[in-house]
Length: 189
Image (cartoon, rainbow, N blue to C red; front, side):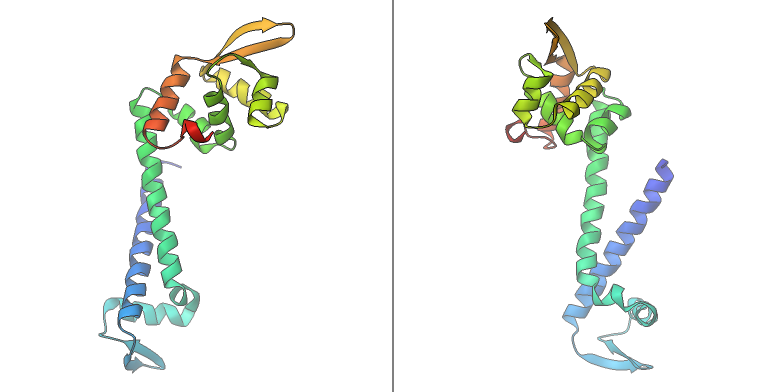
């Protein structure tokens, strides 16, 4: 999705959230019918929104009978879009690339990768990581390879068949930026 599409989606969600909020407040504050248009009772003073409401309510009453929950969900969506944009900007401003942002915050398994990264304060092998986080070693294997690819951890030493890993300076900086901005709390890994 390009930037213009995201702006259009954001704008539509914002307008929808504003409209459903207005509709909810209007319905709550003006609870007595003032007049009717056709068979539809109009509440309070007529407005552009009232006529729009009447038109749409004849075709889709779900939207208006549920305007309060829809407005809440819409504003949460607006907040999530703003938050995601803020975090992406912070990540990029601190010298990390978009691929790392996508891998560590948007892709499936991002929480597991952050927990693995957070747990590597001292050298551990894959089995120790799996036991510490109580996850399958195959998942650890996959996530460790992703962390190695993005150069967030280093291979320390090999003992027998086990390779030991530790978080490097880039991994420390990423966790510091995320913790500072409330994305990942190292105390709740």
